Amino acid sequence: MRRQALTGASALLFALLAGKATAGEPSLSEKLSLLATAYPDAIERIDGNVLVLRDGGVPLSIDDGKKKSHAEKLAAADIEDSLSQIYPLGACAKAPAVDFDPGRIRSEALLKRLYGSSATAVRRDLVTVDWFGERLQVTRKHGTAAALKAIAADLSRHAELKRYLSPSAGTFNWRPIAGAATLSVHSFGAAIDLNTGFADYWRWSGKGVHGYRNRYPLDIVEIFEKHGFIWGGRWYHFDTMHFEYRPELIAIARAAGADACGH
Image (cartoon, rainbow, N blue to C red; front, side, top):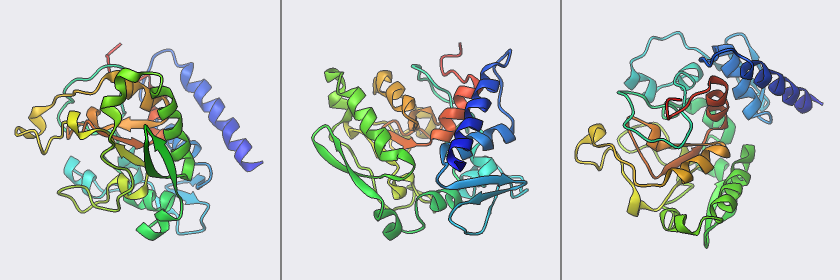
């Protein structure tokens, strides 16, 4: 009953946001409602400035009250920080604005509560997903593996795209982000890297963040986004082979009418 009620509240919120006369950024309250809706098995409720989770652990602070630079958000984001930039949807790719990293700002505390606080804990929920002849390990939690299976099914209808997709550069890998102390979403089994033969990454570019380019067809990006994954090619600190499961950011983008093409 509790899950059904949350789903109903989600439908109402989507209807309200869809009915806005003009697209605009949802309020923090609306973003948090969409966050809770994206993870109904984990998030019980929003209570003031805390997120109450169903695991019975200590509630998580939503906004720590600290004013942070972009670098400080990347290093130690709270939940509010993680929702602060609106991810843009659509079949467009262009060099992102300075420090525009929607989704790269992450609350590690929340990710650990959603997926597991150690490699051992995360491994308990890993399942195998067939990815164009490869067998990839992905978390089943929150529908991640089911979403990746749906993506593979959609992409399998486009034979011309297979060379970009396989071999995959990896899924589960408990490790920090290169050059940082914070954990990669690969640590939680909720990310996939595509064929590195077409990858562009800001650290590899020779020009850093100024060397943006993308060689993956945007049909791939649209299919991933359809199923709740965001793309690292939208980031100022770009990583074009990288996709991660962040259904809350896709839901917020849709509510905001965020369009990468500027329509």
